[in-house]
Image (cartoon, rainbow, N blue to C red; front, top):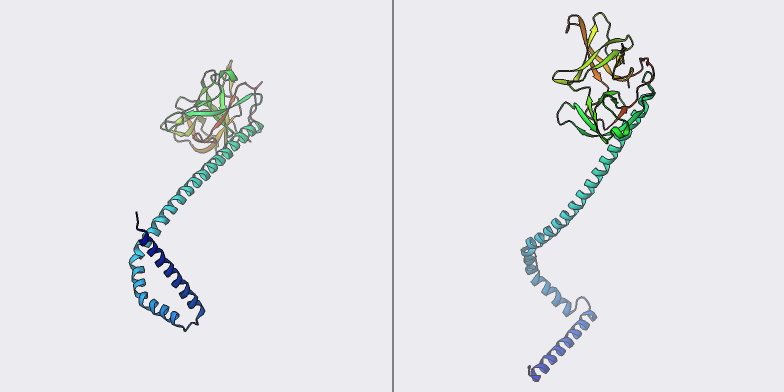
Length: 297
């Protein structure tokens, strides 16, 4: 235990120091700026100024380091926040663009049957594309409607732009579509308005190049003319595709490719790599439909 005398001496010294401090403060604030205590203060500042300046310079790197570390942590946190906000904005933008694209496709499909010459009474069933063939040719797709929705093999499949293929097979809830860009595809088609008919197939090695063969030479085929399904009927045989479904426009005609006939290159209306919705024409139109010039988009 501490000696009581030592404790009393320390308390006495503390009391004396407090008293002197009070006296000096009272005297300092009571005297004029030219007084003794103010002069002592100015002298002490002059003496200690170099020491203070040197200490400030010596500790400045450490101060800057601490400030940099604090700013770095603050910037890192702010960066994470900005990244989250940017990711959320991108997701919202992607969702908005997807919704706009889907809306445009659905509106186009609704408007397709209203075009002049399009076959009526086909009972279209809308479906969503759920899978595509894993090749660069986009030869087949799968849709989310099947036999329970009235979908069966060989029924035509269209988008808002025009013909894209036919049903190859169907299960209860899904179906597979063979596109007209597939090597096995062949569509009876005609050029409007003169009615020149032929068979439309994809070019070997280039499915984007649709070729309309067996067009008689001498026919004046012009770039931009509409190409539609011909929907022929002969001796009990009937085309899978009813007459008047838009396919595309004439890109070029080359009479020299085949001796007896001329070959017409067709640019399809549909973009086979970008559509998300289709319509399956589940019923055949009653009677024979007349094709019209106004079938293009």
